[in-house]
Image (cartoon, rainbow, N blue to C red; front, side, top):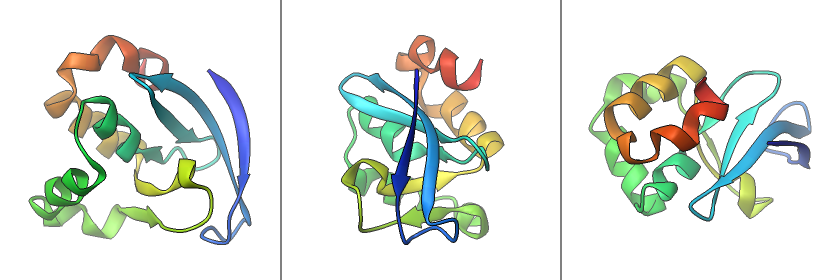
Length: 107
């Protein structure tokens, strides 16, 4: 796990401070200040596409108020970001195959 900081205009802070690591060739990230998790990385590590995460969230409209979508800028930080507790609960339901790789993120 390493710390990084990505400049972005998609966040009012002007940057995104994260902890990140690799899982199945995809980057798992958590915002160090807000605890938002880049769920796109988890979803891709499971073998799904970016478009599949959109379909998953469309099936759960109650999540729409808490979802942050980052488009543009660094490709590495683009995607769907969820609050820690929401990402944890969704991962418990969908990410059994990579559960051991998610221990650094969720404990």
